[in-house]
Length: 294
Image (tube, rainbow, N blue to C red):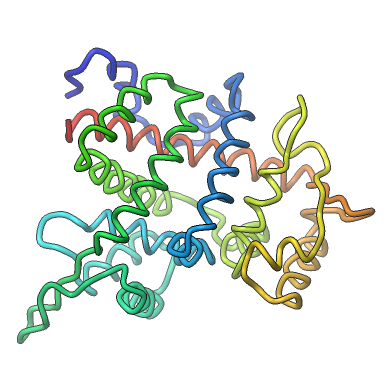
């Protein structure tokens, strides 16, 4: 139940199913393109932080981090729970889930709070360093949603005044990412394979979309493109960056020429839908936080 009047406009999002119709309505919002451009700028700036740079290497790393927060409650995080969440998401295998959990512990984002004893699995919790950086990134993303729903500003104020509210939002955001992936189709679509799953692909996408400008719709106008930009920003080799864009060209997602990249209509539609879907997930998370954690 949402008790605070300034958060009441978030109530309809409590029953939102993040459907294509919902995404379409958000994409029709007069400030949608402005919000989407702002969100991609946030993603580019966040990658300057070493923690977020590691977690935005590809979609698998990012989703693994989000699922950590979805599980960061109750009895804690165990490998079996993490693998079950990955199964539910239909996004990564149990083997990759194991390796990603180990990676997060190796780089100091997870700490082991109890060791395995008998049939009881070891328990993990995110470190304070991870919590601080991840909650800051979630907050900055939510700032862009306020362009679409001003009531989000009230939640942002509470997150600033009460850090546990920021953690609660990160947990709810993990929930919505898990639910969205479980419902999603098209995990094998060319755009997803190249710009979501490929190492550096997501960061390349955010970099290009952060350059989107003008008065036209999102991803309609050509943007400046230099291969070495992707190499520097995405932390991948020149051959990896070249293959990424050659594959995007071969799949009919982009056209390249004279230092400019243009999205094809197929790619543009996917970009718009993905941004709208991401915004709907954040609004669902904001409403759940307002109703259950404040």
